[in-house]
Length: 163
Image 1 (cartoon, rainbow, N blue to C red):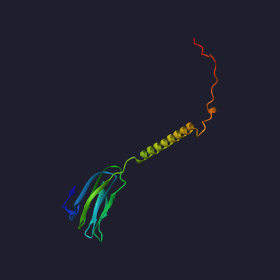
Image 2: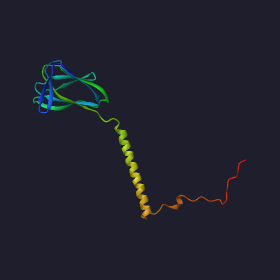
Image 3: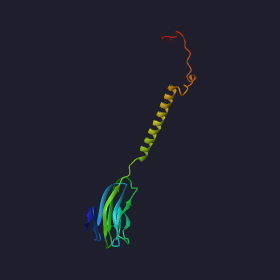
Image 4: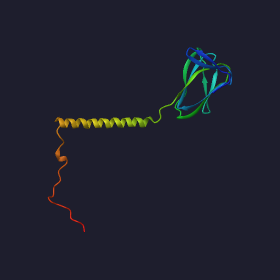
Protein backbone atom coordinates (compact mmCIF):
# COMPACT_ATOMS: atom_id res chain seq x y z
CA UNK A 1 0.00 0.00 0.00
CA UNK A 2 1.42 3.37 -1.05
CA UNK A 3 0.30 6.31 1.11
CA UNK A 4 1.01 9.90 0.08
CA UNK A 5 2.07 11.36 -3.25
CA UNK A 6 4.02 8.82 -5.36
CA UNK A 7 4.92 8.94 -9.03
CA UNK A 8 6.22 6.25 -11.34
CA UNK A 9 9.47 6.43 -13.30
CA UNK A 10 10.10 4.11 -16.23
CA UNK A 11 13.76 3.38 -16.85
CA UNK A 12 14.02 0.87 -19.69
CA UNK A 13 12.06 -2.21 -18.66
CA UNK A 14 12.08 -1.21 -14.96
CA UNK A 15 9.49 0.84 -13.13
CA UNK A 16 10.41 2.76 -9.98
CA UNK A 17 8.11 4.54 -7.55
CA UNK A 18 9.42 7.78 -6.09
CA UNK A 19 8.21 10.34 -3.59
CA UNK A 20 9.48 13.57 -2.09
CA UNK A 21 6.59 14.05 0.34
CA UNK A 22 7.55 13.87 4.02
CA UNK A 23 5.28 11.32 5.66
CA UNK A 24 4.74 9.27 2.49
CA UNK A 25 4.99 5.60 3.28
CA UNK A 26 5.00 2.16 1.77
CA UNK A 27 3.45 -0.73 3.72
CA UNK A 28 3.90 -4.35 2.71
CA UNK A 29 2.31 -7.36 4.37
CA UNK A 30 4.17 -10.54 3.51
CA UNK A 31 4.65 -14.14 4.52
CA UNK A 32 8.24 -15.31 4.56
CA UNK A 33 11.58 -15.28 6.35
CA UNK A 34 13.17 -12.17 4.86
CA UNK A 35 12.81 -9.17 2.59
CA UNK A 36 15.10 -7.21 0.28
CA UNK A 37 14.36 -4.01 -1.65
CA UNK A 38 15.66 -2.58 -4.91
CA UNK A 39 16.26 1.09 -4.03
CA UNK A 40 18.09 4.07 -5.47
CA UNK A 41 21.00 5.61 -3.59
CA UNK A 42 21.57 9.30 -4.40
CA UNK A 43 22.57 12.70 -3.04
CA UNK A 44 18.87 13.68 -2.97
CA UNK A 45 17.84 10.67 -0.90
CA UNK A 46 16.56 11.33 2.60
CA UNK A 47 16.83 9.21 5.74
CA UNK A 48 13.94 6.79 6.10
CA UNK A 49 12.25 5.17 9.03
CA UNK A 50 11.53 1.51 8.43
CA UNK A 51 9.55 -0.67 10.81
CA UNK A 52 9.25 -4.42 10.74
CA UNK A 53 6.42 -5.83 12.83
CA UNK A 54 6.33 -2.53 14.74
CA UNK A 55 10.07 -2.46 15.52
CA UNK A 56 11.81 0.55 13.95
CA UNK A 57 15.20 0.51 12.27
CA UNK A 58 16.93 3.33 10.36
CA UNK A 59 17.47 3.16 6.62
CA UNK A 60 19.77 5.69 4.96
CA UNK A 61 19.98 5.78 1.16
CA UNK A 62 22.21 8.85 0.83
CA UNK A 63 25.22 8.43 -1.43
CA UNK A 64 27.52 10.69 -3.46
CA UNK A 65 26.61 8.84 -6.65
CA UNK A 66 23.20 7.69 -7.91
CA UNK A 67 23.12 3.91 -7.95
CA UNK A 68 20.41 1.26 -7.91
CA UNK A 69 21.08 -1.52 -5.41
CA UNK A 70 19.33 -4.40 -3.74
CA UNK A 71 19.56 -4.09 0.03
CA UNK A 72 18.50 -6.64 2.62
CA UNK A 73 15.88 -5.22 4.95
CA UNK A 74 15.29 -8.34 7.04
CA UNK A 75 16.56 -11.90 7.17
CA UNK A 76 16.29 -14.87 9.49
CA UNK A 77 12.70 -14.09 10.44
CA UNK A 78 10.43 -16.85 11.67
CA UNK A 79 8.32 -18.15 8.79
CA UNK A 80 5.02 -16.33 9.08
CA UNK A 81 3.15 -13.10 8.44
CA UNK A 82 5.07 -9.82 8.77
CA UNK A 83 4.42 -6.12 8.15
CA UNK A 84 7.13 -3.87 6.71
CA UNK A 85 6.65 -0.10 6.58
CA UNK A 86 9.09 2.42 5.06
CA UNK A 87 8.39 6.12 5.63
CA UNK A 88 10.09 9.26 4.35
CA UNK A 89 10.77 11.28 7.52
CA UNK A 90 12.81 14.26 6.22
CA UNK A 91 12.79 16.37 3.05
CA UNK A 92 14.42 14.52 0.14
CA UNK A 93 13.65 11.63 -2.18
CA UNK A 94 12.77 8.00 -1.71
CA UNK A 95 12.83 5.77 -4.80
CA UNK A 96 12.03 2.05 -4.77
CA UNK A 97 11.98 -0.39 -7.65
CA UNK A 98 10.46 -3.39 -5.91
CA UNK A 99 10.66 -5.86 -3.08
CA UNK A 100 11.85 -9.44 -2.99
CA UNK A 101 10.31 -11.60 -0.30
CA UNK A 102 12.42 -14.55 0.77
CA UNK A 103 11.15 -17.77 2.23
CA UNK A 104 13.61 -20.37 3.44
CA UNK A 105 12.63 -23.96 2.92
CA UNK A 106 11.27 -25.19 6.24
CA UNK A 107 12.52 -28.38 7.88
CA UNK A 108 15.75 -28.92 5.96
CA UNK A 109 17.23 -31.37 8.45
CA UNK A 110 14.55 -34.08 8.06
CA UNK A 111 15.05 -34.02 4.30
CA UNK A 112 18.82 -34.31 4.73
CA UNK A 113 18.32 -37.15 7.23
CA UNK A 114 16.01 -39.05 4.87
CA UNK A 115 18.38 -38.58 1.93
CA UNK A 116 21.32 -39.78 4.04
CA UNK A 117 19.38 -42.83 5.28
CA UNK A 118 18.28 -43.65 1.73
CA UNK A 119 21.85 -43.39 0.43
CA UNK A 120 23.06 -45.64 3.26
CA UNK A 121 20.40 -48.27 2.57
CA UNK A 122 21.16 -48.15 -1.15
CA UNK A 123 24.89 -48.68 -0.48
CA UNK A 124 24.14 -51.58 1.88
CA UNK A 125 21.82 -53.21 -0.68
CA UNK A 126 24.40 -52.84 -3.45
CA UNK A 127 27.04 -54.42 -1.20
CA UNK A 128 24.79 -57.41 -0.51
CA UNK A 129 24.04 -57.77 -4.22
CA UNK A 130 27.73 -57.69 -5.14
CA UNK A 131 28.64 -60.30 -2.49
CA UNK A 132 25.80 -62.57 -3.62
CA UNK A 133 26.85 -62.33 -7.28
CA UNK A 134 30.51 -62.92 -6.36
CA UNK A 135 29.62 -66.01 -4.27
CA UNK A 136 27.49 -67.55 -7.02
CA UNK A 137 30.10 -66.84 -9.67
CA UNK A 138 32.70 -68.61 -7.55
CA UNK A 139 34.75 -65.50 -6.84
CA UNK A 140 34.18 -65.84 -3.09
CA UNK A 141 34.02 -68.90 -0.88
CA UNK A 142 30.67 -69.66 0.59
CA UNK A 143 30.19 -68.84 4.20
CA UNK A 144 31.28 -71.51 6.61
CA UNK A 145 28.61 -74.15 7.18
CA UNK A 146 29.37 -74.46 10.91
CA UNK A 147 27.84 -71.09 11.54
CA UNK A 148 24.47 -72.85 11.58
CA UNK A 149 25.08 -76.33 12.96
CA UNK A 150 22.46 -78.94 12.27
CA UNK A 151 20.24 -79.95 15.16
CA UNK A 152 20.15 -83.57 16.25
CA UNK A 153 17.23 -85.59 15.00
CA UNK A 154 15.10 -87.88 17.11
CA UNK A 155 13.73 -90.73 14.99
CA UNK A 156 10.00 -91.38 15.17
CA UNK A 157 9.46 -89.03 18.04
CA UNK A 158 6.01 -87.51 18.57
CA UNK A 159 4.80 -85.48 21.48
CA UNK A 160 2.57 -87.21 24.01
CA UNK A 161 -1.09 -86.30 24.27
CA UNK A 162 -2.28 -84.24 27.14
CA UNK A 163 -5.06 -85.57 29.18
